[in-house]
Length: 416
Image (tube, rainbow, N blue to C red):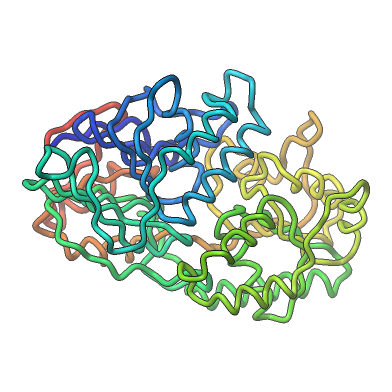
């Protein structure tokens, strides 16, 4: 077995790993201006997608150009989320060089997709007996439908972790899967971070929201549509807060409720949706809500687009207002600019933001301790570190701890 890193090596975004020129694991994009895609378009015999986030699934429809029809394997939530994300990408960049697929390619997903539950082995590329693989998806505890991908060719067992979390969130339970593997390709997004206790994060966030509203301000909480919006809705409901919810997160919430078996507490999400007020986006409504002394949970999580771009100009100049950043801000995004410099581009001009800016670690990724506890079961395996800003440093630390660990570079091909 050999693997080639077409994306996600020593970077966060555009994950794409090609096994034996035959099996493609993920095919995402990197959120930037302009968006960045894997370094080449392969022609695999089959595709397995770990979960429904842009950086893992965002470019998958591009694999269906011409006569190419590789089967695409994923969980039911990931299948539905992939379509939501693809249509949003088309809305933003369709019919331009910034988008490598069309609505026709998105429609073709229905011709080739195969949906799987957790722990159900399936054959790809004619199976082990035909020179292919047996694949199993296991709960990764990241977002609903997220999966570790275990690939077995009869000689080597490769575990691609995808994105994962070892701790419980309100939306999903943390991963407990530790299948036997000879090689582990492990994400490392938060390899240099120790997460604050989630209960403490939730309490601080709820207190910031309540205090700001009591003082007469509005809180804008930019949130990823998939996972983070629903997590914040659950936290808000648990703290008797009734947020406005805007953007793609509304559609995703409805979608996820159709897959209760992939949720930790489907009833809690039902109650949280009932307590929230979904914004229609009618003319002038967002401007009115911005002055409503309320909590607004809205996309996009990195401030690169979406309704948040309507709310921020309305609240930025008043220091009584607040912006609560609740997710990782990739370098080069407006969210990182706001987080580090207290300013951002709005309506063509870089403007200072006087509203209070607070960051809260609601990460759905394992932190340093979580990564180490997960990998502790793989001390006899080869570990390839990817999907992080400090892959090389984390691999070096693992080697010092006795692991056979390295951090592949973009475009590298290696034999396992």
